[in-house]
Length: 336
Image (tube, rainbow, N blue to C red; front, top):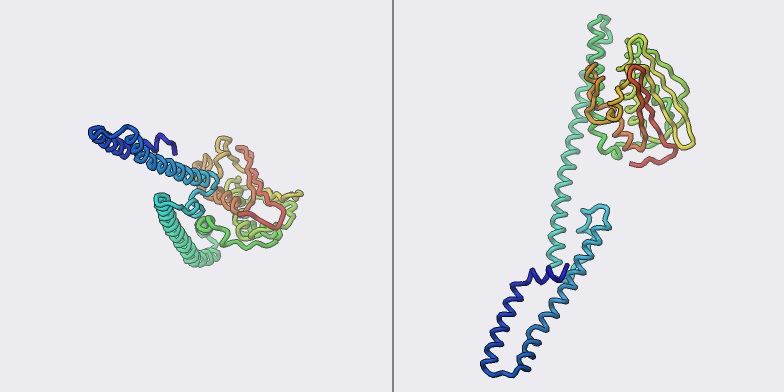
């Protein structure tokens, strides 16, 4: 707090005091009061006032400096009302009380939105589980139907099931820590499960599957990793050329990490779209050309990888193919 600003805010008070003293001085001069008495009255009048104002400036400056320094040193600014020192004068107590009330209201609002998010997630999970039952029944019927139309319907049903699975994992993705069971598992077993989920598409589209060495054990949550691998394989199959497509899956064990690579020789990705493939809702030229993309799969993979402490990268050349690397850190601990 600057002295000039303090004086400016109390200008009316000072002017009133000055005018009152001026009036008293005039009256004393009329009464022929000696000058030394008038000076003494001036000192008695303004001396305590000046001392009070100086002490008040020091007190406010100390409080405000402490407030600003505390705020500057806080990474989470909203914690200011929780860590600020208790005030020892009334004005500061009022400010602190107002800050705490604001903080309380903010926490209540955050809690409200968190509860809304939990309710939304629970609804999505319930909806997904409910809708999976008739889909499973329909797939069972279609599996016994050898007609060409049955095969086409079965393919579309699998796509619907994939979108539903995406919705479920998307609803869970904002807080994986509450649905995260860390354990050691074999990378190959997870990859084989994802391949099995897509086996019919490999066969129907006559896409060659080249499984090379898949070695290493990792510490993470198997179901989340399987979902990520499955999404990458779905994309590899989706954009491979029927009859001549090939998908290669292999891993490389390094000192600090294990890199799982899923590579295809499909349509590839336009160079101008490479940097945006992990954006939410981005489909690029391929999505518009083939009409098979929602723009959620890769975005969700990237989001889950960040939550699980896993790296993911993508390289692609148009009309040559795409290579995705999933990088698992070596060790027993994963940061959220």
